Image (cartoon, rainbow, N blue to C red; front, side, top):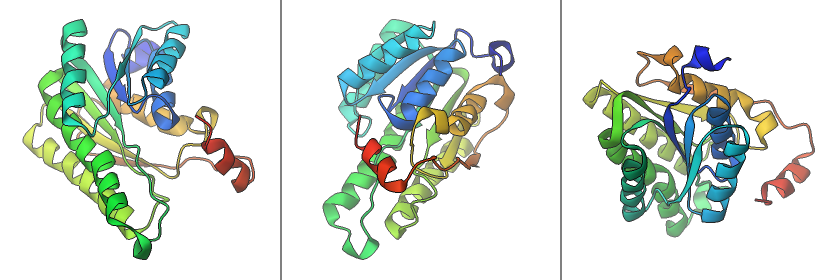
Length: 235
C-alpha cells in the first residue's frame, strides 16, 4: 500500500503498548506510511526505543511513558499530546494482558489484572480519546487473540467488544473498530496481516467503517513451539 492510497501522511497517531509485540509492529507500520507516531508504553525505555526505530524509518515519533490502566497516566498522556500536537487523528490501543491459567485455577488477582489491563485500559483510552480526536478521527482496539479460549479470556474480549459497540452507537462521528488476531505476537515479520488491518482501519480506505471487529488470521511461526515460547520471554 502506498502512502497516498492510505492517506496517513502527516497524520498524528497514538499507539499504546508500543514497546513490544503487536504495538511495536503497528507503530512501525504507521511510521512507514508517513504518520507521526506517539509511542506509549509503561516502560519508558521500550517507548524510547520504538520511537527511535520509527524515526529511523523517516517519520516523526515521540515516546511517552504511560500505563493505560491507570487513570492518572491516561490523563497525563493525553495532556502531553495536546500540548505538543493539539488534537489526534487516531489511536491504536493494544490490550496487553494475557492468562494461560486454566479457568478452574484462576485466582482473583489474575482476574483483576486481566480486567484492568484489557477492559479498564480500553475504557480509559476511549473516554479520553473521544475528547482529543479531530473530526473524523479513529480508535482501533487490538483485542485479546482468538486463540485464548478460556472463559475468563472470552469474557474480557466480549467486554471490549461491548465498549466498541456502545461508543459507536453513542459517538457516530468517530470510527471505533477492533481487530482480533488469531494468536499472540511472535515477531513483526509474521504479524504483518494484523499491521495491515490496523493501518487500513486508520486510513481513508475505512472511511465510514464503524463498530466492526475484524478477525485476522495470522500464519503460524516457522519454528518449534518451545523455541517460540523462549523467544517471547525476550523483550
